[in-house]
Image (cartoon, rainbow, N blue to C red; front, side, top):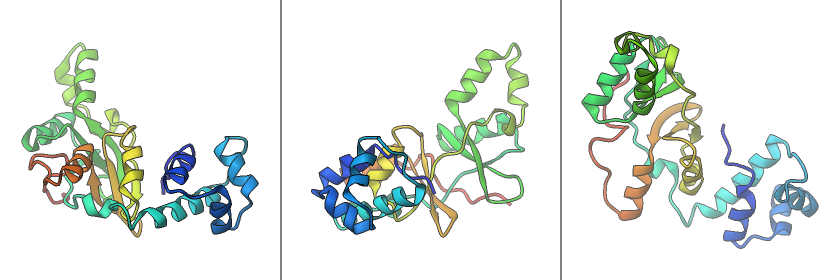
Length: 205
């Protein structure tokens, strides 16, 4: 499971009013290790970083919402074997600017494709029509980050600074999606617009 950047540990710890000593005791580590991690003087193991974020998450949860509170559970996918023009048509029909890409046979996310990416491809191709006929697998980019749906929305917001969307998972299975507009809607108290990336469409067989 993808974790937030290590640089966020100190920011979140300080914001929560947690001392290095308290954090260290809570995860069974030394205060000097926490100090070295925060000053980038050591490369900690995945397990240690995971324990730190899990502890910070537990403190934050009573104060803020979780990913499951803002996720949308109906996803629109494009299969990697479909053509770029098929992906573009789905974006047009649902008003999306990007889509997660799934494997042709299994409900596994293998990449992503965006409106901007398609436009750039058209500009690079001497014959735009040939680009539209390419399979999505040839032009797709890396998949959106996948996080546990119990992750605090503050951690999701950090990931959305570098990604157009975040997929949420429950027991390892992708169940929803979050975009920046979802977090903005949460802060305003208004429901998200109907024509969003995660507008309803069942996963195709």
